[in-house]
Image 1 (cartoon, rainbow, N blue to C red):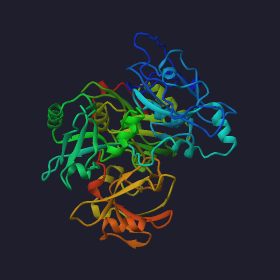
Image 2: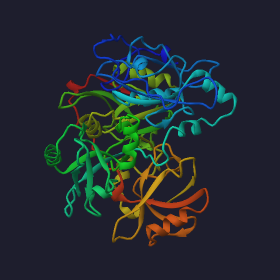
Image 3: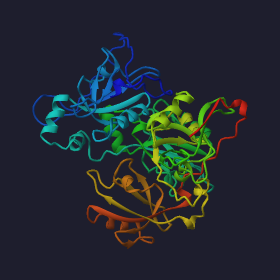
Image 4: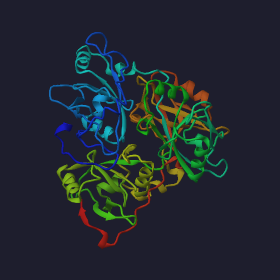
Length: 499
């Protein structure tokens, strides 16, 4: 239970595990975020969830505990601080959490829900049911996913976090037009087939955020200067115009934590390791980088050992052990956690450049994480991303249609043959089936589609509630191979432990 966990301060932008903290209410400031109720919450009738937005200052607590209690289902809101952010935002003791930042969480572990809140930063939106209505819905076998969906417009889509790299023909391939009469609102203009379009940006999208900063207070001139200053690459948060209207009508913030990632150069990677007779097969070192940053670094993978087989690379930084952040822990505390895990452990890592990327954007490096299946032991982990394109093997993925569709989008590049997976919803049917952004589509339900038009492919996909896809990961869509961090002199290494 979260309330019983150790109380540790994580890295900046990530919450304490118990979410509690002192808060002094200033009546002069008023209630900056009144209760946001989609429908009146009564004790009778169908379940009526409430949508609440919580915003805090850096270092401030949201003022509630999230608990899993024996004999009571659901993720339960408890210990709401009087006059605090949670109370002012409409949360009540005993509420059950249905969604965090638009993602349904009732059917995932308490630990994973806590993790999603922790990596969201200083603003979150949560959908809750009162305790009585939740238990009534459970007793009457209501599908809580459908309960959550009724609060949304069918056309609403999540925002997209897109990383654009300039190319020689179209540059960044993007421009912006100010929306008349609305300061800080900008519409996206695209070069057809350009870098921005390939990165997941659509014509007519609304710009929300650029390189870590909201654009709502910027003039068109200031925005143009910011874009030029970004150089050869830029990361932007965009949303389609219809979805923006919905978010604004509900007074919902549009956040990176709600977004689907597109073309990001770095993502944290999660590995499941099983010990052999020599352990996990890597050394954990506490190192100081030239910039002065101290980090826990994985080094010297045993050839053929569990870490190398899984695809862990020398120089990656350790972020989590068994899905709990260790970034603020001491070396010996991390070693104890790994050893207490027994014969198996799950670790989450990122490259030094990856950590720098998310730090620059003001985001948690754990926000977008992909689970890595064990690599073929005959291929050295350091060479996985250096293989020639023709060695990439096609994969078969079976996707079962869910309540919100197949959970992925298909796109094509004008005047070029082939269709590719342009967006995969995190945790959706496509993601669970193994689809990746950038996958080229070879077959749909046994039909070869390598030279088919996008319209033809979509027609094939509309047949039935199950898709059998044959895809291949193209090299130019893969994540770049991480570069190991530079070796440290022994005097700069505080502690080393073989695991």
